[in-house]
Image (spheres, each protein chain N blue to C red):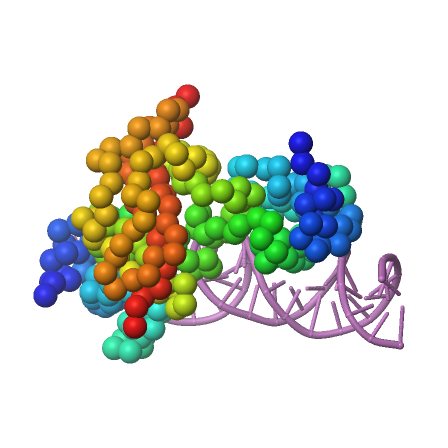
Length: 131
Length: 131
DNA sequence: GTTCGTGCAAACGGTTTGCAACAAT
DNA sequence: ATTGTTGCAAACCGTTTGCACGAAC
């Protein structure tokens, strides 16, 4: 179980109530929710928290390295609490995004591409979850 | 050089003037332009063509398999006329997207992921173009 | 009392849609 | 006549911003 309050403090973010609510929703959710999705989760417990605060708070968390923002779907950004290297599988049926552990695929340790300095890379996989 | 008119007819798209303009702009542009970027190109020659027509035409082209739409950047969709398998490198400095030939990286021919049926995959690489 | 955090509403950028006019079959 | 294509404007969705109030330091 994660302690949201500690996670925030450790990164110099003052643990206010709205922020704790966003942290709980974002850090324990591995379905790559959108900002609005997180807002919906937060609202259930704290209907007073505004959409702007959720958006701004997510932006803050990204800046502080608590979560990552990805452009995997079209339209809306997806937030990902997993900081370890991993791949993404986009389900063609549902649009859902699944995390694939780095170790699941054998890849070259480093990539050398003439003309480019490679910083990082990962696989984007299209497929379907077996039922 | 490509014959836009033929490309359209071959896929059962009536080659009207706005469509030819969009086809020329989209099919010969390998910089992954956005829809608005394509509109800007089209406008230079045909100022009468509306934004809606460009958006709708691009959507039609994607449906007919003439081009692909990708969610690589945040915010706006990128259109890609390259249908062969390839990887993408996103330049961290400029946001520009470069096509990386499939052969440039050695990857397993097929991916086997327990619980998923893999249809396709490619690398998304973060890096910088060397100057 | 100055800074930080918040809610609200308005603005924003990219995209889609409804509709009326028109062209092609 | 029916269908397909277009332009315009309005609507739309996800996101950001300006502002005023209140809480924390």
